[in-house]
Image (cartoon, rainbow, N blue to C red; front, side, top):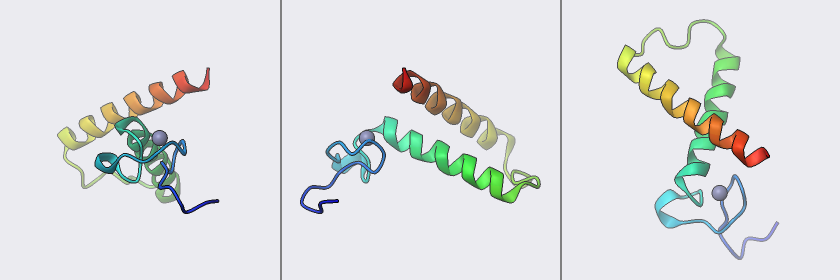
Length: 75
Ligand SMILES: [Zn+2]
């Protein structure tokens, strides 16, 4: 690993300041999806009890979008 150049923590392309520490919104979404999956698995019992329905809908939408993009990348 080299520290010379700041790279995206997801795909290791050059980091874009606006999306740091990622290169794009796409990678930021992937990270969110990964984090979301992780935390969901760890908590197990009703992690969203305190969330507003609108927040959940927005989160689910963002997650679904991020996941579908990830699948595209895998092909
Ligand atoms: Zn990236």
